Structure formats: C-alpha cells, structure tokens
Length: 387
Image 1 (tube, one colour):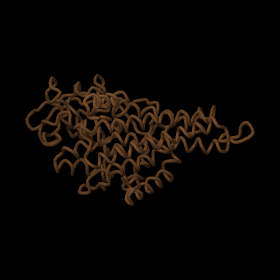
Image 2: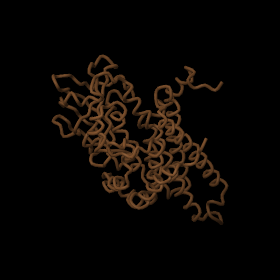
Image 3: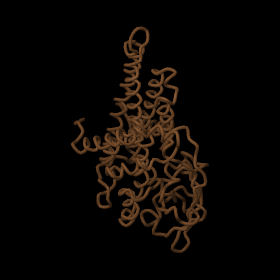
Image 4: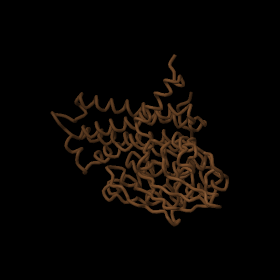
C-alpha cells in the first residue's frame, strides 16, 4: 500500500497550488462580497489544463483521474471554496455523459467543457423532490424525432451561467424507472433561469431555479441514445464525485487552520503568544486530527473511483468520505474562528467566509443524513461488516 503521490499527482498539486496563490487568494474576499462569478478563476483553470482532469483525452481532457481532481480541488479550496466547486463542476456536469453517453455525445458535449469552451451544469434537484430522486416530476414526452421537456430544477450550481446542461426527466411520470438524462443547450426556446439564489456562502458560483417550459430537444440528445438509464445514471455520477466534495472540505479546513495558526503565533495574550496556551494548542491538535483523517478518507474514496469502484456496492465508503470530510470542515472552520475570538467574526479575516462556506458542504450532493442512510443500509445488509 503506497501512500505517496505519483509524479503526475504532484505536478497537478503544484499547478493548482500556483493558481491558488496567484489568482484565487488575492480575489477570494472580493468574489465573496460581490457574489460575481470569477471568470478570471475559470480562465486560469483553463490555461492550466485543470478543467478536464477526469475527462477523456480523446475529447480534450487529461484523464488524470478522480484522485488528481481531489488534489487540485483541495489546493484551490484552501482560499475559496467556490474555486473548488468550479473545478468539481467540470466533472459533475459531464460524468453522466462520460459513463453512459454515445461517442458522439462525449465528443460534442464533454469536449467543449474539457477544453474550457463551454460551461455546463448537472440538473437533478427539484423543488418538491430534493433528495428523493425517485420522486422527480420533470417529464420528457416523445414527439416524433424530439423530446419535449417540462419541469423545474432548483439549487443548480453553475446553472445560471451554463451553456449546456444535463437534465434528468421521466418519460413516464408514474414510473421511477423511466428516469433518463437529456442534453440541453440553454439557448433553446423554453429554457429560462427563473431566479438566482441569495446564498449564505460559496457565493462565487451562482445557483438558481432553471425552468424547462416545453423545451424541444432532438431525440439524439437522450444520453445513451435510447431510453432505459433509470436511477443508475444519477447515482453513478454522484457516487463518483462524493469524495471530491469531501476534498473541498479538506482544502477549506486546511486554509482555515493555517490562517488561525499564523494569527495565534503573532497574537499576544497573558504574557505570550496564543500558541503558548494549552487550550489553544488542543484546538489545533483537534484540527490536525480532523484534517489528516478527512484527507485519508477522501484520497481512499477517490482511488476507489479510479479503480471503477463507485457502484451501489461501493457507495457506502464514498459516503463515509463525503460525510466525514465535510463535517470535519465545519468543525475546523468553527474552531479556527474561535481562536481569533471577536476578530474571527469580522469580515477583515477570511475565517467568517470559511465558516459560511463550510456549511454548504453538508448539504450538497447528498446531505449528511442521506450519507448516513447509505452507510447504515450497507451495515444492515452485511455489505459493510467488521466481523
């Protein structure tokens, strides 16, 4: 069992770290305050070949794998969790087509995203369904050589500025097994960004409500070329990237802990620096434990995905990685802010932003409660056992 990063992984880490230092760190506070999409982040990722890390080389990606993506996300999320989400979205928005699409669909849909020519989004969540994927109400009705899509999707990360989306809809509203994925160009008539959300954190990447009002797409735009995907498509897509959501947490936690530690070394109280106080030392020790444990689970989960182990029988370990790492990020962000006391609560320091951003991670791509359901079911079925 080798825990050392490969040369390729180290190179990606160094590249992402450079972009984080040169582009993201100087702009993170402004991006949060203005809630404007940071196009300069995106262009920097494009120039550094970081947008297609998990995507096939034949369509313009680098196919470096999920672990490589997690490493890159970890680096940029140290300064801005929105930046980590931007990298994640390049895979989240395309993995359904990567796994289940036709060769032409991969070329036409994934290629522009991998090359940084188009932005895309993954449209699953609905106002009346939330985490209950089987209860989705968006429908797609076959009409000759087209499908007519009607419905709404909400909380869609990157949706308001996407050029194309993968949207999930039922061809038979009464049958959960009729769920399919469709590729939709957002310039098509009937597509509308109905509203943009006002968010607590991760304000650099907009989320919003997307409305599909009888949007007509060619029948060739159904992912895979024919009906019959069912639940396996969204579940495989989400499973494959749950560790990378955790990587956003690992990076955020490191950024928060690093900032608090440097502050504590300089801040004097009771006759010496804060780091002389045992109570403060214990906080940093707990932060380190959380960060190291979270990183190991995230890297293990990412490695599993790269080995093709992201099916239902493996989902519980990906859920463990996502749940622990995102909850660890919340603990670390809270304790780091506490170290700074009143100053940590002020916008003069990044910790209040880290604190707000961390809270999103326990909700997106399956809440902590959903992850625990997956884990507990694995235990009850014996798929996860300690005998």
